[in-house]
Length: 124
Image 1 (cartoon, rainbow, N blue to C red):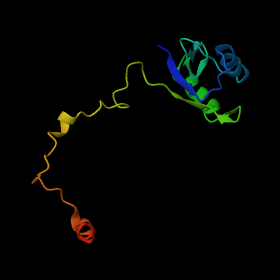
Image 2: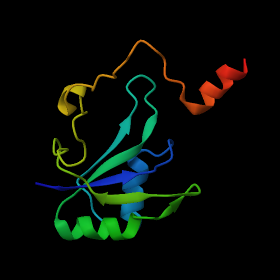
Image 3: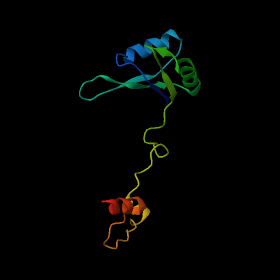
């Protein structure tokens, strides 16, 4: 099983071949590179996943590329979460039922206006 690395903050022009050439120029090895693209436009979404053959290579890639400058931005490289392991990142939305019913306001038929409102009504 390979070790996945998340590459984020990539310019849209970056391809898998670009990332492979960056790794080769740094004498680093990867098993696979997948640039995530928009389904309709096929333009890069700005992130990719790189699969390293072992943990040592994964750590070397992260050390080399995390916060590396590219097109005026800083590249982000970190260990990727296993696919489907998002339990700690997102919490389900809270629903009104989770907090109980909304308390009802007591109304006496009269609208309460406060001291300023009463003074204003007397002046008119």
